[in-house]
Amino acid sequence: MKRFDYLAPQSLGEALEMLSNHPEAIPLAGGTDLLVQMKEGRRSVEALLGLKRVAELHQFACNGTLAFGSAVTVAQIAASPYIQRDFTALAIGAGSIGSVQIRNMATVGGNLCNAAPSADTAPPLLVLGARVIIASTRGERAVHLEQFFLEPGRTILQPGELLKEIIVPKPRAASGSFYIYHTPRTRIGIAVASVAASVTLDAADAITDARVALGAVAPVPLRATQAESLLLGRTLTDALLRDVGATAARESQPIDDVRASAEYRRYLVNVLTQRALRGACARAKGVG
Amino acid sequence: MTYQLNFSVNQHPIKIAVEPHLTLLEVLRDILGLIGTKEGCGTGSCGACTVLVNGAPVNSCLMLAVEADGQAITTVEGLPTLAKVLKPSQGSGNELHPIQKAFVAHGGVQCGFCTPGILLSSAALLAHNPHPTENEIRDALAGNLCRCTGYDKIVRAVQAAAEEMHNG
Image (cartoon, rainbow over all chains, first blue to last red):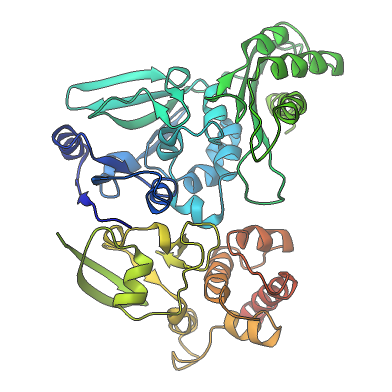
């Protein structure tokens, strides 16, 4: 790799100071995207801000609401029984990334800040209503994840700002979530299309709240809000699922690329939306 | 500018100054001379560079050496020592780890380039899951590419090692 400066803050305060004084420095979390980009010459870096020693970014708290630092690894998220139970889509998404080795290094903050349309933690966090806390020497701001992504590789983070924390509200009773993706390989592959869903049911199993989010089929991970609205007040039937799947497919904005055609991606959104909703409903009923 | 790096490799404390652009893989191979760890793709896809950091497999080609500060690294050269730690009553510390023996016995090695990484991924798997299913073995090894064997003999070697470590 080309030479670069390495900044080694020991605390969040120090990290924000350094970032303020060196706005050219790129925060380094797990490195599984950033170092690849540097090695392949797709990104030239003058300085890296190593987040390894910043304890605040590795914290993990679950007391109903889930709050974790941006440098928590996806392996930790995927292995948490609490997240598997109450934030199922996120556990599945985090566990879908790369290999064991990659998951031991990669972080949720890195997955979000890299801003790939296919980021596996993004659709789950969107349907779970996550907010991100962005910190700088000027203070902190909380932003809904929907507002975070601008285009492939670009987020709303301004120079001197660091993604500090991810906060996911406690799901209501009789809620469930699910995530599913498609890749042509049996293991390890960037999602060609992915869908996360979350639902809340009433006593008669009618849907009182529903969210659907799509990955790898638009410049940014996005909510399929028209599909969501079809679900409200209804119980899940095959006919309704077909309608919702087709609507989500129309809301997607896929492109043709080396991994799949836009047409195939729209087809996948339809199918995966139906499966994700079935999975979310099963979990909401406690049978998942 | 160099950074002071204090870490352990195969349970030996090591203190060296490194430049920040060096990966852990480069330091292990080119400075410490531990050439059992291989560089395949260099971008985290093939797993030939797998080492354990505090017992967890990582791609050493994607980890800056400076970030190994304070960590315990195990490379393939450390597997015999690891076997000795697991079972102090047996072995001199120079004998092969049961996983290594199983790969030899079951033909889990052909050209051998992927083998160090696969041994370490297998060791980490068996450390927290002593009785993995075939599917769990294949999941654990999904980040280690082998272009020779087709994986069947590798999976059988891991199954045999699991049995041996349980019974022996």
